[in-house]
Length: 199
Image (cartoon, rainbow, N blue to C red; front, top):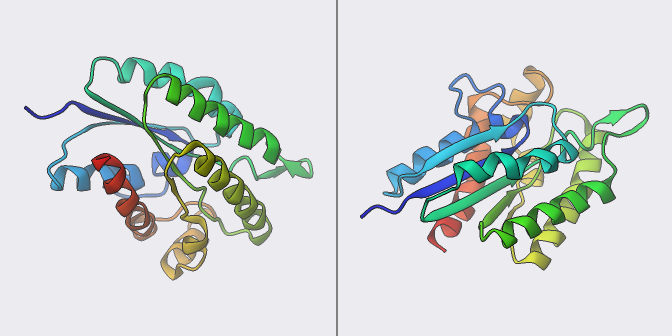
């Protein structure tokens, strides 16, 4: 009997795959690869453009709950933070301490509901100052996940070093890549994803 694997991909526009002409994003690519590996799943993309961790923490559990009822293997992938570090009025939309608290709160609630979680770092954009702020948030998120024994995928710096990601973001809307960039981030996530599904 094939296990009823259900995964909610929760986050922002990068989770939604904005900019990808194939409309898969990295979440869709991971689901396709899981099927190729003999792990069919039901994937729910709950990425919403422009949302910060404050928006996501307010909605994620209500959205995941109905989708994760009744299955035998229920999981959540979280990824957010770039919108938190966007400056509005001379300051980040969400302060780093609040972003960190939101992630901690989500991990605690997932643990309460026995939902294994994988966290993917916020990726870079075409703004060096914002990337510096996001890199600091990335470090905070990594420490939170380590303390919570939750796997964390550090994609931020590798993507800053990626010529494909950088080129596509720069020639696109300044934030989102096209298909090649989503191939890059999916390739970074995939080993962690496979280990997590096997756990």
